[in-house]
Length: 96
Image 1: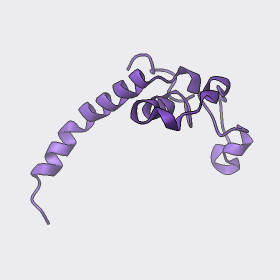
Image 2 (image 1 turned 90 degrees about the horizontal axis):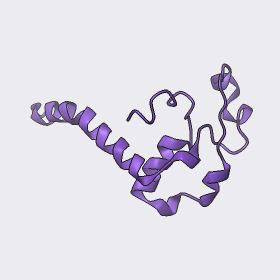
Image 3 (image 1 turned 120 degrees about the vertical axis):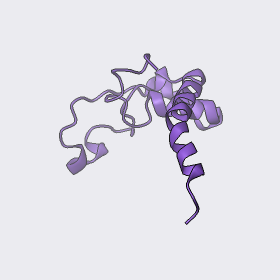
């Protein structure tokens, strides 16, 4: 997923990654206003103490306009490959 490399820390909530997954799973959940909602905030040193409202009025921190269903499928495929070995190990473990 080289297209996403380097943007991961900027894309925090309702951005490219999350919107891409939703577009892949159920496009009806994503409103067209995503094209007007891009909002990058970096750095966010007081995020945990102050909350997201300190940094965004819409709840978006990222680039939702960059999201596509194709990227969502690529993200899901990548996660599947990453977790495959772990899932095989869990499946082979004796029941407790």
